[in-house]
Each structure stands twice: as structure tokens, then as C-alpha cells.
Amino acid sequence: MSVELYAHADDAVAGIEDGSTVLIGGFGMAGMPVELIDALIRQGATDLTVVSNNAGNGDTGLAALLAKGRVRRIVCSFPRQSDSWVFDRLYREGRIELEVVPQGTLAERLRAAGAGIGAFYSPTGVGTPLAEGKETREIAGRTYLLEYPIKGDVALIGAHQADQMGNLVYRKTARNFGPVMATAATTVVAQVREIVEVGAIDPEAVVTPSIYVDRIVRTGVPAA
Amino acid sequence: MNPTNAFVENLDRGPLTKHEMAARVARDIPHGSYVNLGIGQPTLVADHLPAGSGVVLHTENGMLNMGPAAQEGQVDPDLTNAGKIPVTELPGAAYFHHADSFAMMRGGHLDVCVLGAFQVSAAGDLANWHTGAADAIPAVGGAMDLAIGAKRVFVMMTLFAKDGTPKLVPRCTYPLTGLGCVDRVYTEFATFRVGPGGVTVLETFGITYDDLAQRLDVPLSLPDGS
Image 1: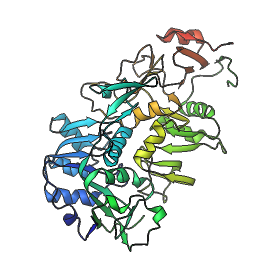
Image 2: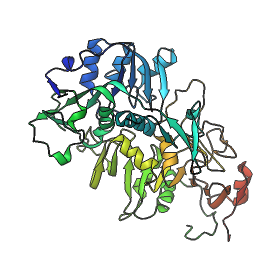
Image 3: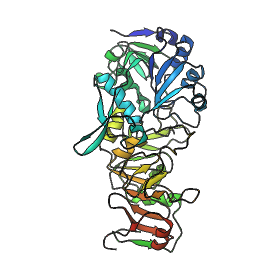
Image 4: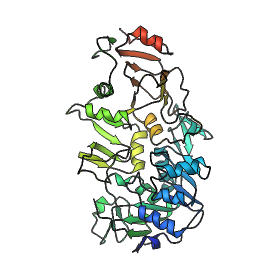
């Protein structure tokens, strides 16, 4: 399916259903699709499972979505931060479920979902509390944990630039989870700073090919 | 201080300062290594790599050849380290996504990583992500991937906790990050090799080997030939 271009973030997040699993890109603020998260708050979907590296910072973006009580469960590697007070409060009050996943396992589980892999064995976490309940297997003398894919209904990601076909390029470390999340969800929504003509992006430089991208909105944040 | 394998007691001085510990770690990083420095004290190691070290720093959020922290006027919100601090890029830098970044870690391509720790066991088990306190919110980040991924794992930590208990222990009592993954432990009082052969003291600073042995609950040995 070809990509749809939207003028407003509200239109780009239309149709996200209650109970959806939403992959949210970004590492700290780098690559965080803030305008899409704000639009999701206005859109109103609730009972969500959110997959993101962190569990929100300060009172905006993902933290604001959490504060509205829209997130039933969060899957992330590093929820606890100096400014994660919204998550911390919800967690301590038992109002949000948490699945902690090692950062590389989180990325690889997303990659597996996008690549059609049914499960994979990883050495990360063997012998630790995060291995509890996981199937283990010894392969060539080393112990591995069986890990399953994480598939999203929707991915919200931030990229630097898109062309009108939906090819994406990222900028510096803001790339982080964007390219893997773009492969791992049924509907992929990207907010970008700039939309250029088809052919204006060097094909050798495309990071996320258009096949993965469904909806694009330009959010008008100028390049740094 | 210790160019050969011979054990050295440095008794003409006190324990190492934080920066001296970082410099001590930096001296053991081979020329041209690909290195990940953990969040916190290990980042100090970058300040002590000699000019021309050829060391390439990896940051797990997706970059090789990371430069120093950004100064005023250099801050770019798209360019941070794993601690979310604004940093800079050096010529020859490369960016990649998270799955690639952890694949290069898990795949054994990094030469060295330097991590902080709550506890390290004599066998090289690492505990550095969770105190195990009932009300603590678990947060692991990339710690478990780093612990098992790099070819060599160096730990940089104070030898004793604030309550005076040793952090080099027979068995970790805090929740584990990785099993048998640590090679070296750099502390203010001594540098240790840990692993299947137990704890070997490579050098001490401001303390004798005998006094060190008295303050720790793990059997110590000296390097072969000392």
C-alpha cells in the first residue's frame, strides 16, 4: 500500500483502537515522536500496551499519555529515570503493568517481529532474574534464552526526512528504534521534519524503505 | 605502575582518586580498541585515553566514534550518548539503529566495555542493575547486553559500599546482570583479575596485600611469578 501524507498529526493517528499495542520510538527525546503522542492523547485510545525504551520523561509526550491513564501495560528497558515521576507514581500505585526487557533484547524482539522470525535464542540475561520463566537451551556450550517477537498494531516514530513515497532518513542518534519499529507494526506512522520530492533522497542513503511506512506527517520542527 | 605481570604494592601513596582509577583503566585498553563506556564513572575513562590511542567509542543508542560531551553552542538534540547527555561526533563516526547496535555488542565485536557495579563475585558474576530492594523500580537498560557482549568486561567501582561492606564478594547477593562475565575489577585500593581461577590481586594502592586480604571475604592470590 502506498503511503498517505497528512497535514495534521491528528489525522495521522486516526483509527488507533482501544487495546492496541503501540510501539513508540525515541531514546530520551532523540527521535521521540512527540507530536504523534500528543495527537494520540487527543485521539483518546485507551487500554494501550506501549513498547518504548523508556517510560516517559517529565510531564509531556509519553509521560502525558501515561498520566491520562491510557496505558495498561508498558514494555521497556529503562523505566526509572530522574524525571520519570509520572510512571513511578502509577507503578507504585499498581496502576500500570511493567515488563522490563534488556535493551538489546527489546530491539531484537522488534526486529524479529518485522523479519518474520518466530522466536530466537539470546545469551542476554542468562542466570539473571529476567530469565525467570524463560525456556533455555544450550547451543555449542553456551546457554541461551528463548525470546519471542514483539509485534505492534501501530508504530509511532520520528524521522528526519521523508520523500513522498515514504522512504525515510534519520539524523544522528535519533535513528535509534525508528528503523526496527517501522518493520514491526501493522500501521506505521512517521513524523518528519521535511517531506521532499520522490528522487530527492539518494537511494543509497534510505534507511527505512517506503514499503514499511503507511502514514507521514510533517511536524515542521526545523532541522537542528 | 605495573608494566609486567609482577605484583606491585604501591605503599608510597593513598588509594586512587576517581580520575586516577579512570586513568588506570585507560592504560589497560589496547590501542585501536572498540570500547563502550558505561553510564556514570566509566565515562571518565574517555578523558584519560592518550592522544593517538586509536580507541573508537561505541554508544549503544547507535553510534561509533563518539566524541566528547557537547560544549555550549554544540548541543544537538539528535546527538546524545546512552546517558542522554549531548555529545559530539568525531571524523569517521557511524550511526546505526538499535538492533544493529546491540547486534555488534551481543555478536562479540566490541573489544572492551567498562561498567560500574554494585557487586562482583570472585567468579566474575556481575550485579549492577538492581539493588533488589522491594520498592525499587527495576530498570535494566543495556546492562545485561553489555555484560555478556564485549570480549572483555572491566568493572570500575569503589571496593567498599557506603556501609563498609566489600563489593568484591564470594557470591553476589544483589540480582545478577550476567554470569562469569567480568575480567578485571579496578578499585581505589587494588586492581583484580576475576574469573574461574578466583581473585588475583594485580596491584594495590595505599594498602598491603595482607591488609587487603583481611578486609575482604574472598580468597586472594598473587599473579604467577610474583
